[in-house]
Length: 438
Image (cartoon, rainbow, N blue to C red; front, side, top):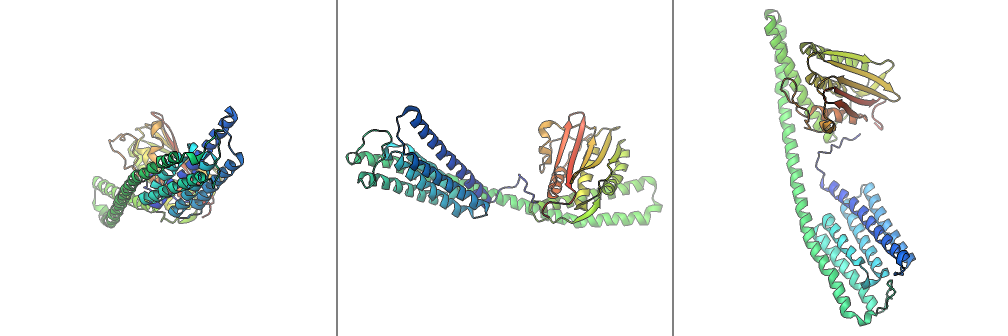
């Protein structure tokens, strides 16, 4: 399962594909609304006389253009060539609609402007200008053919109109469409190019920040590992010569170093999962034993804070194919959060159960709780939305984001149920057989 966090900036190709998808849907909806309005006017007042067969075929062509574009995007075709094909198709659709809804007597040429605006954001200023020129040419061609009587006008208004006698009016009508289309191409195209440039700069800044963070994290890992190793050697060699107070200080320093190293590893893992470069190391695991293993070192911290940790692990859960390191870190993070935000004398309960092909783990506490409006945000990267803990410390905003990514990459999901002052219950599920399609 690919992890695609919503806080990542879209690449240019992804942004173009999204804009094209929206354009296709809006284009189809616009033509549909125009068609309904025309047919509704015909049936409601009897003023119009619209060739139903031709307009239906035009609507079918518009649907074909829309469906073709969406299918091309679905198949992974490049957005820009697909946009060219779709916009050329829509220009043809609008041109046919102009003819079969009255030529110079119809308001349909206004749709040319919508096509030009879409081209501005999909193809840039030059592409929009070409679409505007093409639209002006197509409209001029329709007017010329009707003026020269090579193409009979469709008089949907049931009023006589002789284009041979209205040559000046046709020219004015054409200018009223061509000039705004060209101006729109220039203005909207310039705006679209500026937005794309700004987006490119943001992507570059984001990439530089990610590279800098990864470099710093990599550089931190080696000295931390050396420091922890040195503290462990010191503890083994001088253990019998140290009094209880100094032994506790040394143990606290070692635990703090291990905690910091875990945070560094967590940041590296998050970075890899964001880049879709993380590979799960799946193995059959007994979650009973894994959760008990994670809870054991937390019991000492809980006793120091006058807290209790209870394990209520269901029967017949069996083994689960998962990544030991990731799942252990998820359980540890949830327990650590529960310890931070549960007052002295509180209770933390871990439950495990199975329903069908899913196992569910729950870490519940009777701590300060989380406001409803913040319960989704806490799973975002750096989405710290809880108050400082009882010691005045604030989290990094990375732990729960890591939990969400680690669970989702397994094909599961994570959520919280909480009320302010009544505690929080964090749930996550894992497929028993591992990620689907793994």
